[in-house]
Image (cartoon, rainbow, N blue to C red; front, side, top):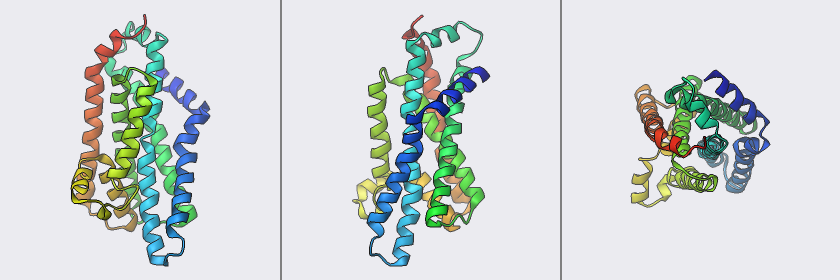
Amino acid sequence: MGALIFIDMKKYLQDRGLLFWMLILPIIFTVLFIAGLTSGTEAAVRDQIILSIVPGYTVMFVFFILINMAEAVLRDRNLGMTARIASTPLSPYLYLLGKWIPNMIIVFIQIVILLLFGKLVYNIPLEQPFYLLLLAVFLTFTVTGIGLALALLVKTNNMGIAITQVVALGGGFLGGQMMPLETMPAFMQTISKFLPQFWAHQGFQEAMKGTLPAMELFQIALILFGFGLVGFIIALLRYPFFLKQARG
């Protein structure tokens, strides 16, 4: 498993496309939208918009790691790597962990960098840093757990990209990252509460302001953990079928 983690981390660090999707693009979107939405507004309104956009776009763009996870797993399958690994004593559980952990590291680094960018450029408050750290860990677990399930469910890279767009952008819209929830119809606000993006965004906003109670943090962490755990279980159940498609 350690070798898998090392190889994938090395590939990711050399991938300039990943750097664009995970850092450059969200920073560009953040800067453009803040500039457009805060132009001519009062200071209090401007601060409120920034406090929504910085964590909102952070939450939305971490889901683009799903593309990378699907591509990496499908590449292993098509090149025969999956079949060769399956012939070793390495269990499916450890194989999936080996594909999961590098992406968790990447996503966690992404969250930290984007929040620090918000702090340095827009001076967003970080009143509960320990809570923010915990939320980053649980969001990382959620996103990569879903990504692992997606990677073993899709059959082609194009399918993975299409589904990622739906999950990231659709979830970002319904979860309140693209527009305030209070401006949406009531039924859409209800739907948002079934999405991990909604809970992560709300948690980050409250922790930044220093108003996130411990019990609410526990609730959000439990919800995010649940999404990630379901993703891992789906991936584990799907693995035997995925292995049958692997080239020997």
